[in-house]
Length: 448
Image (cartoon, rainbow, N blue to C red; front, top):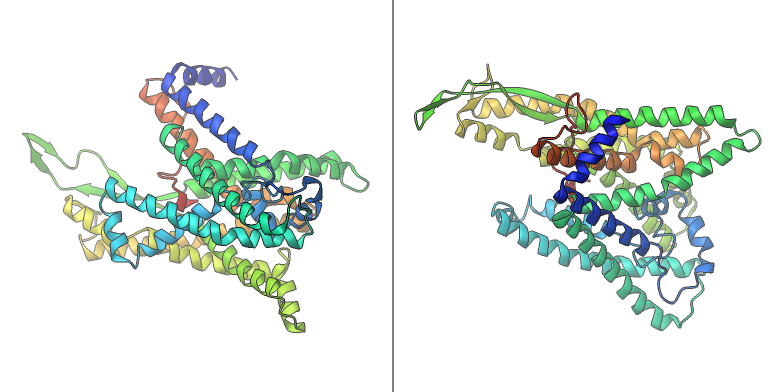
């Protein structure tokens, strides 16, 4: 405890770090307040049906990501997710569109251009999603205090403005705050639902035949174990030793001075495979549901793939995650580029020839570590279903795995790593006296 107090004092002594943390907390508070402001023209007392609908399935996931704003019909109901979607689209286009590839290689100027394109695309995606959200509101018999003809354009404008405002908050946190603003907004939205889910689960265990306090303690212990396993998945790397040929510059000899490594992450794809798999699973079902196409086979199909506790849903979900993990890892990690960079820098892997043999070796190693990583990622993704089957309430079960848990773990680790870097740069002890906090090397919007 004394070490923790000393660390907090050290953090408070660094004015730059203190100002960044306070600014970040202030902007996050503004975001949480906005998440509870109901859209103009809606009677808040008529939102019970929407809150009930947002308890499970796709709506439950969206509500968790927005910190309850989706179920509250808030001005920030669509949250930051349209920005995430736009970032993913830009990243995927970077593999096929030469102009975007060129901007990705232009450094800071190219990054500014891509950010501007991403912002414009975010507005377009939000404008397309807003009418769908409003239509869902109307289908829940939400009571309006104005005419529908006026409510539709006003609500659309407010939802688009809300997402732009959330995007602005995220960028301010990244530029002026502790960093990783978009990731922090998502994490805060997820954590905001944790206290209520925790209390509901505790109250449920005290009900008749609920299991009591002992069973609740077992559930919390299981959650802690899952969190530790998730931390291991996020941090796990395979280090490939690299040596450099001796070279002389300005009379100083370089090379073979110390052993260096190429860190290949076991889970280089992050949570993106889960996000893609969820989209594949939910979008067709959602389209079929709202188009009103009815048949016995179609209804059984919708029922089977809407049941997140069902066998076939989780089996196909896990298979899709494994496939997308290999696909996204191949996109993210360019072994040919790594081999070329090593060759140009005079580096080589002991026992492996530079150039193409190095790329092939890295590709083989990456495939071998990605396979168990993808299986472990799939298991974590479907753990909430097992938690629900075990009797844990739906909201609390979401924290046992899936995108929510991995985002929280990754963002917390990276934030702690940044704070520790400030402490070490000011010659203070880090957050941990034994070892250093290991987070993701870069947490951008596309790695969430």
